[in-house]
Picture (cartoon, one colour):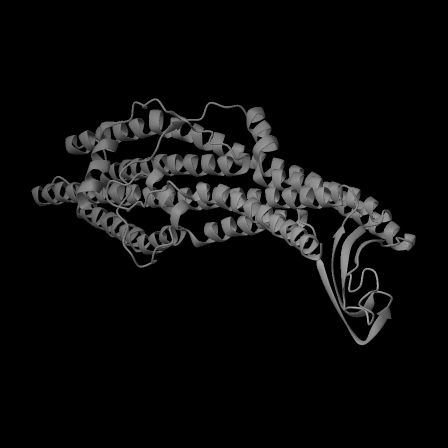
Length: 464
């Protein structure tokens, strides 16, 4: 009988342990599946922005840290839902207790405490909400990483474009300087035209050197987001992704409310504290302990004694007495205050993020307007103005300073158009980070850009 009772208890313990291990393994397998399927991405001359994002997602150390914090939070769920460890007791009688059936030599027992109904479930719910909040932290870190990569990529693209445009204008002014020198030798233009062209060349050369020196820190910034050595080279971006972002400001606000990971994290924390209030109310109820004791009894002095040497087996039930009501009321008040604080933090974050999104939407719409303005109107007009000024200078009807002014104006228009395109991409990336949504999903219509834009982009590839 003794062996049967002990065997049953040990079997129950091993079964509970295996169920807990199986639950932990299922949670771990679920998270492992989220990291599988990603293939290594090598950054090369033909890499797109999506390749950069994929490389960052697979290699960035900060994102991996956020993911592992999420995994650690998930592993706390089975711990919270599991029963406490059973207690094993052993008693050795230094002086044997004499009984009718024989002296008692030693006693062994095992007991298991069972929390009141619903306590383990509420603890598990609280830890599940905490794990869900940790997942939103991971999502927030992922969106922030993608934003870093996109901003650095768009800055790098603009730098390439600025260098290409400036180089094109250096060639243009050098040609103008040659024309001015020829006309000066022929006596049809003053020497000041040559000097003005040389001054303009010096200014453009200084701007070009500044832009070229900026490549190293921008590459370091992009490499850091990709978890690569900051000294590794990166090719010039070959293209800027164009997307049609056809959404209203009201839609963006709805996405923010529904999908922003920071707000969703705070929502889960509010639910966690709500479970904490329910758990605090359970403190008024006792926990129950069940156990079995077995006493090893020696044979009686008189072998004829009935039941001589019979080992008694005893069942045990105990409960704790929750009588310190002041402590339990304080626990409940604490839980309610934590929930109130979580709700207030959620409300503050919602207003703050809405204000941030409003400002970002303004900058995005402004960048879109400037892309249309410069790309469709000012850059073509600037090129037309330069062509007219060149023809007038060759005919002797326009001064050389007017020709230089037209060249400067075109340069500023071209740089402003490319900066607006870069800013539009960066602001769209910021909207995606705040809203938690990929809002630019459709290829944009190709604008009727001037042929010099394509030529300059081609020159950028050749220089690389």
